[in-house]
Image (tube, rainbow, N blue to C red):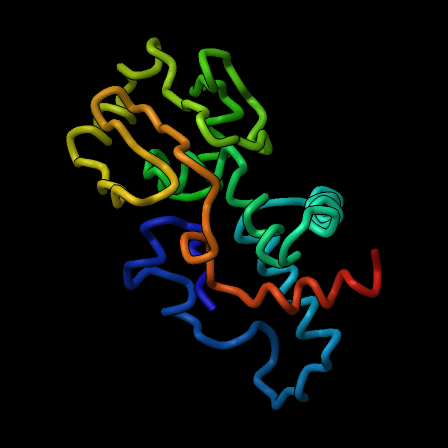
Length: 194
């Protein structure tokens, strides 16, 4: 399954899944995976999509479990609220990995203060913007010239392309969150362990 870890490269013919659409190792028949294996694979896939380590992911799950509501949706909502994911979703980075690097290199202000933690959770009403001294960099100039895809008006994030500013209007709803995985399998994986 494509995880889109390489940004635009996954949309082209150079994507690894297009070139080699089979698992690594010798070509032999594989057994049907067990339930545990399916749960583990799904959990690892979610971790890789968002670029989160195991301990941090487990903490997100514990926090989501304590929150009232559907645990799987709350887990994905926490992951979507990460600062690196917000930068990626707004279109200021080609991949979450690149967004993580931009945040760690102190390219962004959050409500007027520099934040260099990609795991910072944004709230409704927060404003994320590129620092004024970084706006003149070649990367952001190219972004403006090529044009960033406009976000839908009812999306949970608002983007001002000229000022390179992201407004967090509200928390994401279930239909606006990442849907390339089965949340239930992740919850079942951790339900026996946490």
